Length: 230
Image 1: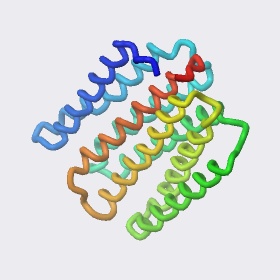
Image 2: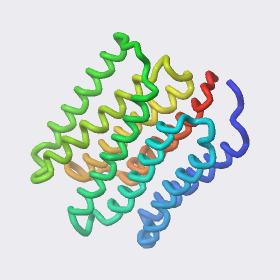
Image 3: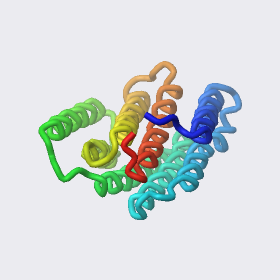
Image 4: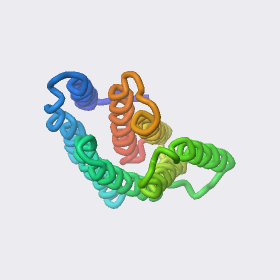
């Protein structure tokens, strides 16, 4: 395994420093500064992606950029979800589109072989999605259909991330797939905290896993842009 270039390491440190600042602000009286700190996380990742995507295939690159942009829009809407449920629904829709674009990107990099482990993973992920929706169902009131569509979208995204196995380099596959799983963990924690029971350290858990998800997906996609098998 080759050592990552210094600028990638520096970016990783700065990225998670921004995440730490945002998580800290969420628990203080300076929470209003999150209108700057939270969007800055995705803006930084978008800039990093644009600076490093040379060599990546054009269409997967565009889908990745769209996924990041709609994630940014979703982040902004969710900053105001305590004001009105409309902002939560708009945020949900934005992230649904982000998952669709990620899924298209992963689909273009899919393996032509569907082995037994793929079907096992598909069944496990589908079972998890059904269990989570069942758990949330009675608390969703008038957003049952939007949440069902969102869960479907994120499951397809993760399944497509797994479908990249064998087709892409080992490191790229692991980074993207772990990132996709982190997205499910983050959204599950957010849903449980919002609709079921308040979780201790909820913002740390939700934002931490969310930022990790986006970072791993982007770095994983960039790692395979030249067919790197390291």
